[in-house]
Each structure stands twice: as structure tokens, then as C-alpha cells.
Length: 438
Image: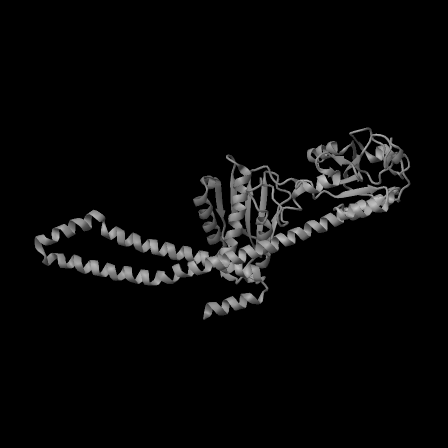
């Protein structure tokens, strides 16, 4: 222990051997009840000291029933953070890390570590001010009591959570800007295609009529008509004209879909409720299944079970996107083997759409998080984490619910619950009826 350390104040903390992990409750023995509010979740607290003996952090008691790991030196601390990210880091100020200054600088410079809650234990007010300036979440001048430290840890956790919420809000705002630009850019070329389809359809009809007139005239041309007749039969003109017409209709249907998505994006950005109309959920399910099967070889693993259901108020395109998202997630969950079942049924007051899979299911610890924005269990680059949060928002705008069945044990089961039109106590139902009569 250096002369400087010998004269510095100390923080009483878990007496753990060097680079070891022990529950704080075991290390400290008993403590008077009620001093610190009990917690149901054990935290992983990484305590970092410059030397094994002495310094600011010495043997004592860390508040709360936490798992505490004490390491010596900056390099060992970084390795411990990467191996098992702690809930919070408590470190002496000024612990050196070769090449990057001290431990606080090293942590804040590494993208995978910079969000860790970091509490700096300082020997002076100058160190405290410097720690805040360089990005510590909290700084405290030793000595500090266990009760105060517990309060500071809780405050730091809340601060980090608020910071994460702020980052998510900013990411959503940035995403909104990108979607708005995308919506604007796609609108003009899509409208060009849409506006040119009616004259194309008209021109095809005129060309078909002209070719039919030529064919009738062949009867008066004698042998001179033979090359024309041979050319027509070789190219199978009747099939070409029919196929050309089918292609125009397919393009028309697809561009309507693109413009519908663009309108929904615009409405979503403006916070507008979807324009609901009375519709058949079974038709939407069938369309979604066909879209997934066309896009994935594994689509054959989908077992479709549609019951007799009544109409309900829906925006067909948005509902179809929700179902497609659930089906794709289910197919990802089962991998190369397994089964996905989509079933529709009526409860008497609601229409249910269930998407079940035989995958590994959703771990209980994650069930409360899967509907949060940006939460995803997929590898980096394979998921945005927006799917289920947006899906739930869409279903709630339909007056329904999107839930995960906690009692389903054979995989995962997501349920869309929509009110039937006859029981949807919503003024929009009357508006739909009025529109249909017009």
C-alpha cells in the first residue's frame, strides 16, 4: 500500500478475495433489518480496485443481496466486463489501463461496454468533478455508508434506464424520418405506374380488336395470308394477348398494394387511426399465408385451419402485415424442422387468430420485453426489433389485443383478438354501414 493510499478515506465494501465472486449477504454476515429496501433480483456488482490491499475500497458490507466480484487492475476489469457484463461497476478513480488512460476512459471508448452503469469512488472533490466531466454515471467521495451506496446504485440504474429510453426515442424519431423520406420517394414512381395502367389496358383492347379484324381479313387474302397465319400460330397470339392482360392486372394489384403500404406509412407517421372496413379475416389470413409461402421454401410447414367466423372491422393490408410478421417469426423459430399452425375461430364476441409453432418458445424472463421497441432475439442484422411492437400497436388500433399465451408449452402461441362487427361498440361501425349503402 502506497503512502498516498494510506492517507485516503476508505469505502467499506464486500471483503472478497482477489478476482473472486461472493454473495454480499454471505460476506457481510447479518445486518439490521429495514436499513435498505429488499430487492427480488440479485445484481452482479463488479468492484474494481487498483491494488489487492488498501486503497479506497476495503473489506466491509455492500448493501443488498448482490453477487459481488472484486478484481484488481484495469485489464482484469475489462476482461470481466466482457465475459459477464455486470449490472453495475464500482471502481476507484484513476485505475490505469495501458494505451487508453484510465478504466473510465477505456469503458466509455468501447461500444459494447459504454452503456454499463459506472460509479466512481473518489478521494477528493477534484476527482469527483473530473469523473462527472468524463462520463461517470455517478461519483462519490469516500467514505460512504452502505445505505448511501445502495441509494446511489438504485439512482444510477434509473438514470441508465432513462438514458436508454431516450436513445430509443431518438432512434424511433430517426426511423420516422427515414420512413417519411421513403414514403415520399416511392409515391411518385408508384403513381406513374398506376396512372399508366388504364391507358395500357385500353391500348391492349384496341390492339386485340385490330388483330381480330386482321384475322377475319385473312379469309379474303388467299395464299398471301398463309405466312401471317403461320406466324400467328407460332407465337400463340391468343395466349400472348390473354397473358398480357393478366400481367396488367397483376401489376395493377401490386401497385395498389404498394400505394396502400405507402398510405399506411403516412398514416402511421401522423398518428392517424387506420380506416377500418367490414372484412373477412379468413381472406386476409389466406392472402398472408400465400405471401409467406411464395417468399419462403419453408412455407409448406404452415398448417392452415380456418373456422367459420363473422365479419369484423379491419384494415386488410395492415392486418395482413401483422399476420405475415407472426408467421415469419414462427418459421424462424422452428428452423428446418417443426410445424407452424394458424387457426381462426369465433368466441361469440371476438374473432381469434392464433399462430402456434413447435419451436423452443419464448423464455419466461423475456416475455415482458418482446413487445418493447427494438427488442429482438434474432442475431445482429436479422431483426430490427420493431416487428412485435408495431404489430401490437396496429392490433390495438383495431380495438383488439395481441398477446403471447404464457400457458402454451409446445413452443410459442401468439393470439390476435378482434371484436366482431356485431359487438364492436364503435361509431366507426355505423360509418362503415353508411359507406356501404352509398
